[in-house]
Image (tube, rainbow, N blue to C red):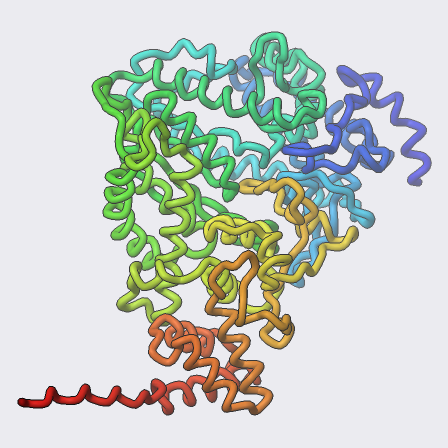
Amino acid sequence: MAEEAEKVIPDVFAQIPFGLPEEPTPKGGGGASRAFSVDGYGFTQWKKLFTPRQLLALGAFVKHTLAARSALQSGTYTPEQVVAVQSYLALGLDRLADRSSSQCRPDPTPTQSGVINTFSRFALPIYWDFIEGTTTESSSGGFLPCLEWVVRVVENTRSLADAPAPIVNCCSALNSSVYDADLVVTDPPYYDAIPYSDLMDFFYVWLRRTLNRLSPEVDSAFHEPLSPKWDHHQNDGELIDDASRHEGDKVKSKAVYEHGMGRAFQACAAALKPDGKMVVVFANKQPDAWETLVSAIIRAGFTVDGSWPIQTEMGNRTRALSSAALASSVWLVCKKRHETARAGWDNRVLEEMRENIATRLREFWDAGIRGPDFVWAATGPALEAYSKHPVVKKANDPGKTMEVGEFLSHVRRMVVDFVVGQVLTSDGAGADLATADRMDAPTAYYLLHRHDFGLEEAPSGACILYATACGLSDHELEATWDLLVRTGGSEGNQEEDEDVGLDTEAVPDSASDSGSRVKLKTWAQRQHRSMGHEAPGGQPVPLIDRIHRLMHLWRAGDVLKVDEYLDDHGLRRHELFRRLLQSLIELSPAGSDERALLESLSNHVGAKGAKWEAPQAPLPLPIEE
């Protein structure tokens, strides 16, 4: 039966506009195009992603959807009704295609017995095993359930029937004819996170066939074989960082994206009234993406007037369950900077930033925002101080300016200090930024990682963000500070693990590109001879190294050496050392050897107190003559 399907495919698609979907699939590569790998396995045309039986089924649905249009047109339906119904049927067919490719998997949920669609995230990887749904059934994978979702949307948007009809312009943001707008709301491309138009092509090729000759406007939108990409001649088009569209030139691709963002925001400024507002929605945990966004906002003449982190992502989506993808989007409200705004000074800007951010961090923390979301949630309040100036000069370095990247580093470090303060005080009460600020970078990272992930595997994306916030790199944490160990991400599960999606970070030469995961090394695994005695490059010895050295000495039963180490390094009266020790106890699993060891060490430090020092002998009294 499967072989029979292949024989009749040419006859079915001969009756369909544009025939078989033989348009090319995207090429995998660096940047946004790393979301694709199917072309490397021979799936070089969209039709090859479907088995002959799937192609036959989809072709049959396209054929009869077109026939349904003819039936509607010959009846009593208005042209508007024909367009609407045909569009709904086409959308249902597109959902069917999403559940009828060779990249669909069986749903492992015990209560379900259906098909997981092709795009459970913003990527098109290769899967070795797949499930083929039955398109005529009323279960998942069938046409009726797909159409039912379209009907649900229609029913739930009936309340908008009396609303003013929107005007939809399909054009570049640079060519907008809108002026004197009160509000511009934009959810801009997320740097190199999502290859939007390439993903759209999977659906585009079927819509183009199903909607052909529906109306002049539709034909105009689908006149090209594939959706619009970057136009080198016009220097305009889809704005993402994808080196494959610039002959593999990563530097050029990055520059085009950054320049394009600036031009787009300038167009937004031109479209607004003098007192108009622009709202930017952004959810990306890559520092470079934020740096580009902020630079474009400031260059376009905007200042950030307010910001909120809003939970916008479904917690049950694939990426939320298997990675540290952001659950919140940061919404930045911007207004035009006053023409008389002057340059600022870094010391004053940073002081104002601290005032703005302190209260908001507490609000975000109390609201339950954690992890990568928390790091970027603070960016908005901090920008209120920085973006009000067209440029920020350095008070102690004449002629130099504080660039956006440097400013964001200050923001991330301030957030790290706050979170460290929360962890050190366990219940969050009395967290002291000044105390936390004394925490060295490797220990701060260790504490953040341990608090969020324990000693279990963690997605490298979030760890890289934390490392960057602490002024470190994941490579340094692994090779220099001996705190991390790679746990891989084998070829078989690479596509499940990699952070491709709404908020992907693409760090060059980093394991994040291959979807690897990392773990903290346990104290027992850290046995370098110099640990706790000296640090690489003559840097101060991290507190976490000192505690792990003491744990080795205590386990060995060498109490004398423990006391010598404590006294030689002045740790008995070191408040941050004590608080860190207590926090590690609370982060250790109850009943574990680690916790027992830390508790006994803490008791010893507390019981013995500071080393007793004999007072100096008094000076002799002068002899009276």
